Length: 142
Image: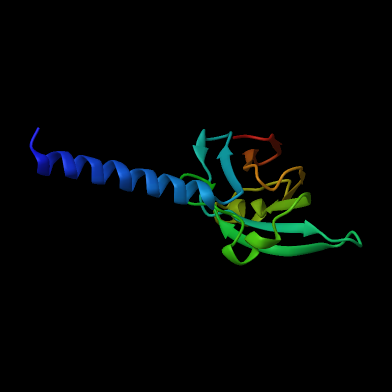
């Protein structure tokens, strides 16, 4: 191999390692995904609010987002709240009524709150929602 080619390969490999290390050092701890069971398709345009239970039991807003074309929010914890992310009880509220109203379709659930517990702030938490107009299911994903 020529020295320039070897140097280029080494540089690219080193940069890939730096990029992966940077991503691993500060990943977003929470993502969500909404799939419509009726259509078998992702559910874009659903607003999702993130809240944390305070010491008195009240819910404090931390952030919000809207599902993308794949029905995902890959980083629900805003950068300004990453320092506050710690063990405790959290709630994501999926605003499904607004989603179905835009489709001019009735729905039994105007919003779906999902309460979950963060045991370790170092882990990633993924909350998928399987949705239909009159039912839903959720679980802890990867």
